[in-house]
Length: 199
Ligand code: GTP
Ligand code: MN
Ligand code: MN
Ligand code: MN
Ligand code: MN
Ligand code: MN
Image (cartoon, rainbow, N blue to C red):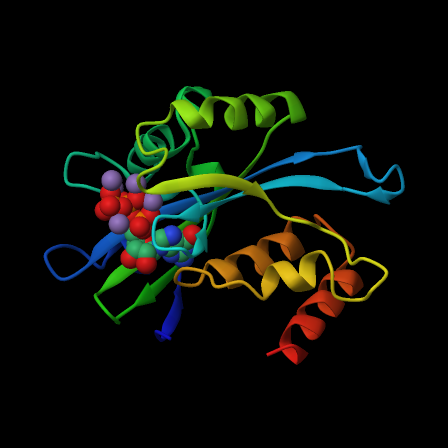
């Protein structure tokens, strides 16, 4: 696992080419009034993807020299990986959450964003995803994150957190669920504890 260092956005932006590459990823979410089996509150729909390398991660990617800003790069990557439903998302500076620097296996600064959608907008992204340029290539499919713990005590978020994630995507997910208050803090802590014990 790579060492990760939290950075302010200003610090992060002082790390320039050719030494450092920059990547931006985003968590898209929508309030979800639905209930699983008519009973268990779903709380929010939260979007992640199965990557080409078999790891879970968020949509997004490397910012190229052709992108005039981090957000421009992020929006380009979202269009490539999510397809036509992402064209109107327009993530902006106000959606920025955090930056981390990683030195291994290469020097990358990873920026993280989050944006709330309506459930209809969220579903439009899901429906457009199989039209995406990278569908079946970089992206093997979209998934929703289960934000509950089933009665067996492990099903749901604890099992989900036991998957393998790219970079610090797992920490990004846990931190976002906490700060955006997408589930009760004590449930989230419990899920993280259970996932830890299974290791
Ligand atoms: P290419 O077009 O093939 O280069 O891929 P990409 O531009 O889509 O890049 P990718 O999404 O693979 O991410 C670029 C870098 O960020 C890689 O070094 C990954 O390790 C890292 N990364 C990928 N997904 C995530 C994520 O969800 N969270 C974090 N923190 N890092 C990620
Ligand atoms: Mn990409
Ligand atoms: Mn990507
Ligand atoms: Mn890549
Ligand atoms: Mn790319
Ligand atoms: Mn690509």
